[in-house]
Image 1 (cartoon, rainbow, N blue to C red):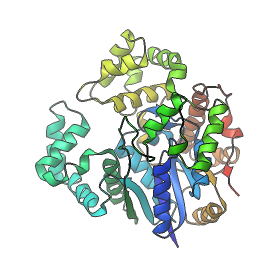
Image 2 (image 1 turned 90 degrees about the vertical axis):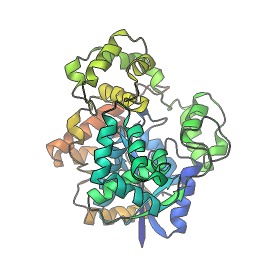
Image 3 (image 1 turned 60 degrees about the horizontal axis):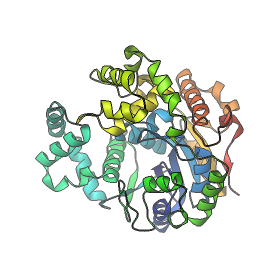
Image 4 (image 1 turned 180 degrees about the vertical axis):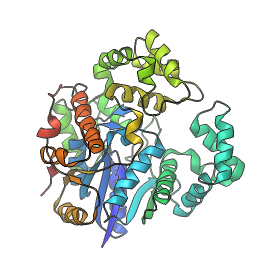
Amino acid sequence: MKSYGIISEFNPFHNGHQLLVNKCREAGAAYITAVMSGNFVQRGDIAIVSKHIRTKMALQCGVDLVIELPLPYANANAQVFARGGVHLVNQTGCIDTLAFGSECGDIAKLKKAANILTSAEFNSRLKLEMAKGISYPAALSRATEALDNSLLETVSTPNNVLAIEYIKAAAEQKADIDFYTVKRRGDSHNSTQITSSLASASNIRQLISNNSEIVKYIPEIACKTLKDAIVLGETAELKNNEKAILTKLRSMSPQQLAQLADITEGLENRLYSAIQTSKSVDEVINSVKTKRYTHSRIRRLIISALLDIDKIYTESLPQYIRVLGFNENGAQLLGKIKKSSPLPIVTKLTNSISSLTSSAQRMLMLEIKSTDIYNTFTEKIKPCGTEYTDGLVIMK
């Protein structure tokens, strides 16, 4: 029986995600596992609702098992995000196909791009472009154009880029995984307007922030779960506790900033200077932003500073599989994973922490601390310790 994996954020789960799940079933998936970001996400932001609520939404809509992508990989660039997610998919020992959306919907074209992007000639051209002081995405586009102009559009759209990184990570890790892609429909990833029921996640989050109707864009049962969370004050935005971010940033020295994940080339000095004069997080971001440093990268640095995510966390791959929730089908799959995976399986924190290696314990404690901080950004502030009290999401 085929087992499919989806590396995801589900921030929140919407009709586009439902389409991908449905297509996986049509392709023969007996089991679907989501490797999902926790409470902080890849664009350097906070999840609109907690990972437990998003897990429930995913399970309600056809996902069987949800495992967590650890924070340092979730709050990271596309390469690190993909590397962590693919590793967990591979280390289950049970998932044979990785599924994802893409703008092109063409696995052959994505594989061709991945091959070019791992070639020595491409790396040489990329370094030359980066030396000109432009951002990584811009350098990537220019280097690709020089080698194969027909692939320029393929490497210039966000879902394609992430898909290519999945393929590269699987090759790097020698993972025996097939790939399945669904062509993205509806509004684009960065669209600022809603033109169909397949709205982008960013637009849906904006609707939630504006107290606007979302029912057209989210599967009915998941929409009820999300609306219940909204009523209970469980939505989260960084603006809800911006002073906490500024307080943390202002407490850090250039030397401390230099230890953050993805700080290179003396960027800590530019960031430190911006912190000294800025009166809002947006001011910090706009002061640091250049052609070389994108908004997303700066936002991720700010989240890394807030949560103490230093370089050491991503020097190795995830060292455990943490389960967030499952249905009856997922329980069967989890039983298989426990037999086949070389990694420890974390289901209950109180029983698991002491059995992990010291570095894995450090990662899990970071996750627990970050959730306590996340709980100060929700509309209704929650106490510490919800990582222990929320427990697994189990759907009957």
